[in-house]
Image (cartoon, rainbow, N blue to C red):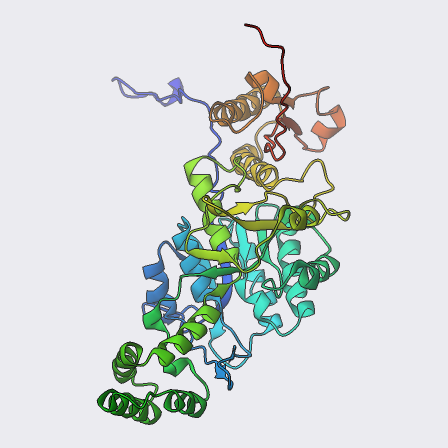
Length: 480
């Protein structure tokens, strides 16, 4: 430095006082893939482009409203759902109701006449260029026509997570509103690879997300059947009320369902004066409110991560916006879900008297693995790996010498100590919680150094959930 001092004066030289540090990466940034009403931001199309949002209001501004689902009525009051069911809008609603924050949306197209397995699968590929997402959610996989098509999308999700090594897939069970014997074994047969990078939840949920004002006669495909059912049920007395009901029914049959204001006016009137109409609309709303759980589960992951940490198992947590699970599971029915012979655990959502609806499982699909059996273990390791990996990029092309090794070891030690202090690692002291090795003769040979390889070995003691708590009671002799 002295060679550059040519003019007499005072020169300042700043030196870094603190070592490099590891910044903990975000752990709950889902990527949602599906169909939307629109995809437009500042006049530009964002179809087939990952787009980051931070609120449900922002979703609606960019991607629009829910699709108009039209149900078919049959004599006797049976309601048949439409062949094509778009689920992304309601999944995002459930996500934010259960603690969701920032997420990415990939719209593969506008609402139409089909949901494409090819479009959903190919939409995963652009996320290979996005580093931030840590969860993969495709609610509309279960809307595909067959269980095979759904499984193909889900296998692609798991393969993507394994390739990226920094994200985790949340899966639904195809036809998950049916009894376990009708859908679980089929799921386990078809979802086969990279099991430690995903978890599945069952059953579907009867929710309260769709409100009564969102369901009108516009949601009925065959208005002629609805008209006939209502006319047949009009009471003869009092005559004035009967005439009023018939007049509103005639308006309903003639109105353009695209005229939302007129539809809402007739709907509100009929809901008040015609009990049979209100009953039928409630049946339609119940069908709309039957939803797969992944949107809610992604929100729960986010809430638990932000409140406690990624090392806390996302279980024994209330599911908001839910009336009941579609199937009320017993302890005996959950046995095979939680600990099957093939290890493909299915996490149950159960209702408990006086305690509400809770996520009652925390296992990955790789239940036979002692390393990756639990969701929080897999996701904590993803967080540690990604955080340290990104921080270590600063040392690429640095001299492969003891100074670099000491600096890296100190940086990683400091980071893991901070995680341990917050309860993220097991052990009564840092030395019990983790070990970091780096150096010649320790992790590297002279040949490694000649080839430009710097090896760091990190061992961490991760936290397993207390899944089975055994209480032992016995009587003791009276002492007084």
